[in-house]
Image (cartoon, rainbow, N blue to C red; front, side, top):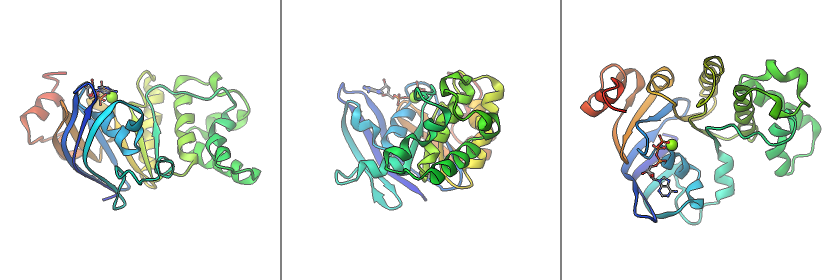
Amino acid sequence: MKIQINNLSIQYSDGTESLRGISMGVRPNAVTVLFGPAGGGKSTLLRCLNRLNDLAEVKTASGQILIDGENILDPKTDVIALRRKVGMVFARPVPLPMSIRQNVTYGLELAGEKRRAKLDEAVERSLKLAAIWDEVKERLDDPAAALSGGQQQRVCLARALALQPEIILLDEPTSGLDPISTGKVEAALQELKKEYTVILVPQSVQQAARTADYAAFFLQGELIEYDEGAKLFTAPKEKKTEDYIMGRFG
Ligand SMILES: Nc1ncnc2c1ncn2[C@@H]1O[C@H](COP(=O)(O)OP(=O)(O)OP(=O)(O)O)[C@@H](O)[C@H]1O
Ligand SMILES: [Mg+2]
């Protein structure tokens, strides 16, 4: 397992208990999907994995999150290094007000990389991995803001990939995208998993079923069922999972 979560519980300072006793392992070189209705704790869990919850109003966190065997909830964790290892892509693409090229190299330049050849190499590699190279290679110096939403989202994915993370977290990355762009992002995930550990909060049950090697169903802070996607979406073991994937509740 690349990530092992042991008995994780998270409570926000307003008393909301958003995760209760979650235990699960996440495999490398696979797409693991966290799905379920609104408020189930999916985003909370993603944010724990790179300690973005440090910025939110979390009152208590108990349990462990081991990444490569190290408990990242330990106060001694180097959070900067952790966030480099665990990249994140959000629902709304937020391109920086710069060119496409600069959007991709931004993090590397911040980290001190100045060599043009290294930066160019990172731009090409990351945009290829994010399945957008062919669409933008002739106009890398155009503003990223001039791209379509779907293209911007893939540039944001490339920006995360440029830092060569080991784990990539995506929280509803295709919400608001047209079906063609959505298909391209989904195809990019299948390429990414060859090199990375990919964790996706999908925008729908259908997307979960299309993309999941492994799927975890979250309901009101609890992990109801976790299995291979092929099993969970065809023969769920739990009645609640079945009811949700059949659309009996939303
Ligand atoms: N910063 C916060 N402060 C207080 N409560 C929060 C905070 N963030 C989330 N919560 C609460 O924690 C619970 C889980 O929220 P979370 O955003 O993780 O769910 P989700 O499964 O991602 O939902 P959605 O599908 O709507 O994105 C909810 O009850 C939510 O109101
Ligand atoms: Mg969410």
